[in-house]
Image 1 (tube, rainbow, N blue to C red):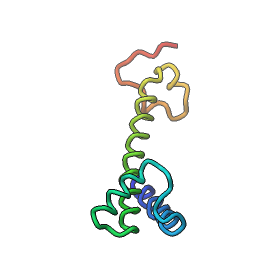
Image 2: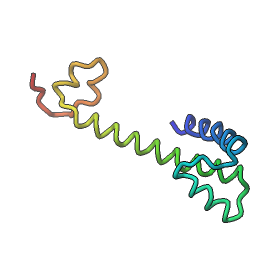
Image 3: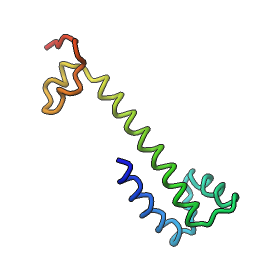
Image 4: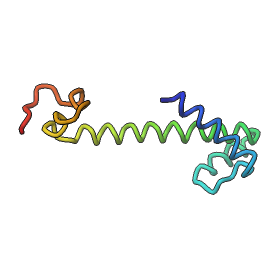
Length: 95
């Protein structure tokens, strides 16, 4: 999961740095500006920003997806091909 995030961050950093000068209009530009203000170079600032925001985004997406799966009733999960690992142990399946 993190390897894909790192590859995407580095690839995106090339585009942001060379095409847009590190500024894209997103909220993460504040993090990039903070890194630039502390004396980092543009390339390092953009890569650091992408790694930080990408990691937070990945963790939040995983957590929300996990919570959604846990809230799905067992009687629905039992009907899915790969639903069995997500069924709560010791629970009665109605249906």
